[in-house]
Length: 514
Image (cartoon, rainbow, N blue to C red; front, side, top):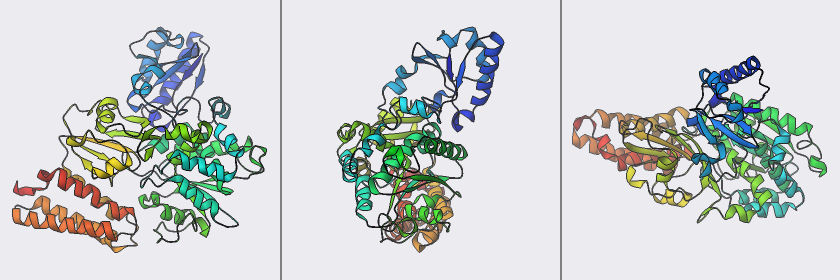
């Protein structure tokens, strides 16, 4: 009898290990033979710890469970699918999962993260095998035809990067995965690396073989020790099985993969600062040109994509570009992994095609605020994303629609705030965040963010309406300078949350004069 208990950091933080120990002990005490599988989370964090049992080839879910529930679960013979107050029925039929369209996350949380045979049984490595049967040009064309865009920020077409690197002449090329997931309210990279590391490895291997790169680096933030361990373990397993290293799958192609651990710098999420860090230097932005696709890591042509972009590639190769491009809307094709966080009732991972409305995400999947108080603001795209009011709940969640609405998609993080939030405080936080995390290379970001904090404090503390108006005008001018003059998105995007707070929630900036 297979019983599944998540082993990822989210579930373990609320007692999953204690549940696993309790299940093992209770089964031994009652003489019930079980096989305990430590899988990853399926992403429904509001149901953790989610315990599953396999009955007749179907997974039955129970949750959210604690160690104190284990005895009563055994009393109900849950290992046979017995009825219990925590029973949720068949996992795949839970509405949260049934309404999703999981492509990139199709295997997340299903098996033990380092179970290579299980990964292959679920379609893993079909994409790589397809790629190895095609020419390099054909593989790159598949990625181009799929419409896959970078899932980290600007949404730049991944296939164009790949084509540039493919055409570059060099004795060495690299593939770098940016796993420095530093945006508040985002956790999809961590979950995928902890729960399904082989998908990322397969995506990076496809990228390497497509453009002639023989070495890859995964740059993971130091705050993700479980993800680091999972990726290192999976790399060892894949290498021993012939899916990494010399002569991959007998193809004649070589590809070695290494993990590099970042030191907690947010700005190293920017691709050139990440390259500097991997090279052992201080994480500082590089001026462009040259582009990393032509002169990237150690001055060589380099593919740089983030976790969700590279993890989407295996399905594109396995199922074909047309199947992926059939999802989504407009120029935003395929699926997006949205991360619901903050003051939300049902937080977690939602993968669906681009074009779902914000309302369907946060009220349909998310169930509204956790506190039950009225929703007031939603921030989309991390700490540098815009704050939307409830009047924008009908916005389509795709790249172009969010830009037109005055925001951005970013890494797909969606953070809710109820009526207790003060948006002037949030604007101040954005400037403070920038001043702390700035690499210091350019003046608009380094100095502008500090002056921005001071200006917002003056607005919040002033009792004079004329002075408040003057300081608001100064703040907007400062935002314009930072947007246009900063070298990278750190300073260039900090004005976005500030301006959106000013424009959408003006009453919060009336200071002590209100």
